[in-house]
Length: 91
Image 1 (tube, rainbow, N blue to C red):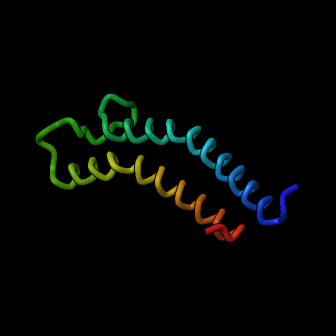
Image 2: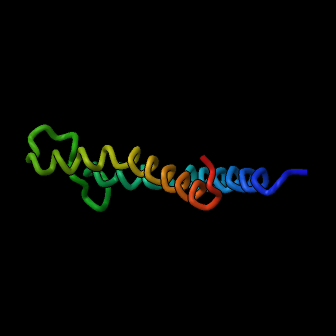
Image 3: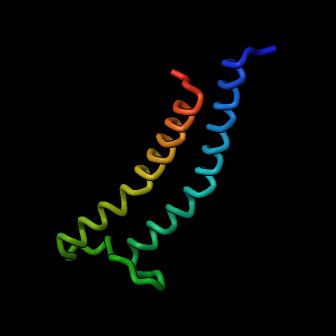
C-alpha cells in the first residue's frame, strides 16, 4: 500500500499521460490549420509561402506559422507539467 505522496505521484503521472494523449489527438488538427494557412491551394487562400517574391511581412507571417506547431506542443506540455507540479508538489 502506498502512502499519500506515492498516490499523489501516481495520480500526477496519470494526469500527465491523459494530457499528453489529448495533445497528440489535437496536434494533427493544428498542423492541418497551419498548412492551410501557408498554401494558396486551400479554399481560404493562404499566404503562398512557397512563392519567392512575397513581401517581407508575408515571409515573417510564414515563419511564424511554420514554427507555431512546435511552440504549441511545447506550451501544452509545459502547462501540463506546471499543473502537475503545482497540484502535487512534485520536484
